[in-house]
Image (cartoon, rainbow, N blue to C red; front, side, top):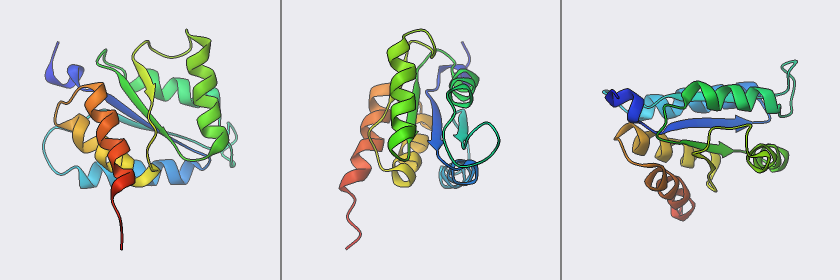
Length: 137
């Protein structure tokens, strides 16, 4: 297995395709140079409108899965519920897929930076979740 194959993948699920893709670009840009984990956006409904789509999420997770696990961050209620439903199905997502409880933007940056450094799925989830503790004032 190559180094790239061993990295935890990250999927960002948003009600908006544009938001998901923008946060992917932001997180990738802030991760710096060097090795970057596999990262994908799953935003909006099947027609490009606002919403969530289970097929888009499933495709994105499978696209970044290299066997080390996939951390999924979601923005709002039904995005979270859709990922939870896919995980509950048991066979829709790769076995080491995990919904991470984290703020969407800050958590995405932390997850991508940590995954790109070669951390395991638990460390990626912890780093993303720790973003809740970053106070702005």
